[in-house]
Image 1 (cartoon, rainbow, N blue to C red):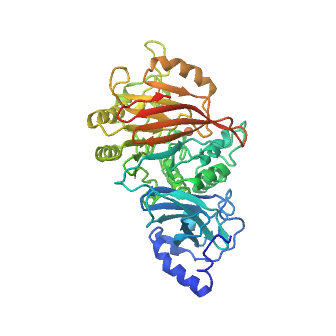
Image 2: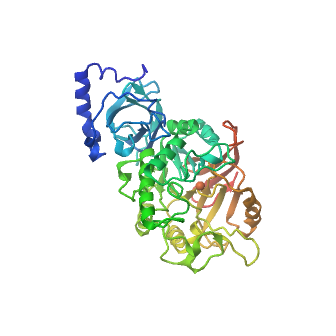
Image 3: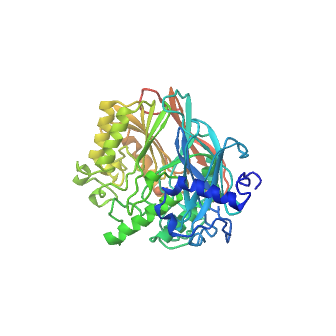
Length: 524
Ligand SMILES: [Fe+2]
């Protein structure tokens, strides 16, 4: 408690009042409706209000987003009264919060489930900061975060981890225990932060509610996941950049097309609920404020001259899966030139960004596997996963041709979704092993979600029919740790000994290196 240095500001009621009035303007533009509720400056909480932890994200050279949500009863709607509550925040140069360089007050409103998203500016590039929140008499734990290096600076090395797919019911987040101990500048989450399903028996822990549909449902599900101590530790240790896949709304939805059993109107409302709850629980900027069933999530981050991340959203704008979706041979719809993963606007934004980039490594952070993979190795036979880019062949060809013709520096695709580890050469023609390799794809396994044991042998058997695939492992859960220098990119596949128990050991299953200027990974 004594670490928190708001006491001086709170010394008298009069002073505090001035302080609040003076700083409210900073966050007033965030939520126009904040005055619809009474402001209660000294609320008493029915429980610890920072039960969901703290987070930071969206690193820029001069700023960062700080996140928390007041939820004294996290699993039951949050437990906050319908009043606006000021949440004080401060940013310091040291882990003891002695040398505070920025502070202010954000207003947590019932409209956004008493979450706060503070866009802190005026920070120095490429350095660690620590942060903390206070509401009423309660203080949060202290988090650590880091700004990006300035755009025009030479950066010798950059380290990040990427993660995805954390089905609560399938296991413990032991991978986050390992991740939180790593030396990283950034964590990237590629989606399936929550799963929408009702409880399923058999796993080590279970969802506490039926399949989620309403805004209250989605809020409670995010809150359940956020109560995990390992996940909280990983958020508190690094800034995160997040994007979503399908399960943040519903399995394999595409644009406004649901998976099953809903009218389109029901699904539009459901998507709006899901998008709002996602915003409320992630350290996102105003750019990503939900507007009904829409939320802008594709965006770009630059880290000096070493890396630029193009973060994609391949669910919100995609055309329906072809051939009625599934694992099967491709029908003609899979080659439809009008089919899209990203929508036209996002595709053009991606191409423009890659054309202009000055970065050594150009990262495309996205959801489903980009490389072709034929799961049936028998001659003349084919089985493709049509929810992946294999169902959107023309869109993939446009991207890979663009990489071949425009030659942005070292394109590297990072991918989630499939709950297994892969490394691919990205070819201009996957059916011709002699065609140019124009990029490298690293697919990370899940934090906890299941890859069915029965799928492993046929997938392994098909490797010989997919020579551009350099690595596959379906057995292990974990994350990918990436170490970038000006000369090499190294990806280490970090895996845990178990997700059936709360604690595990962690080790490196395999490492791959991409040399600067030569697409394709080599195992070390
Ligand atoms: Fe998943």
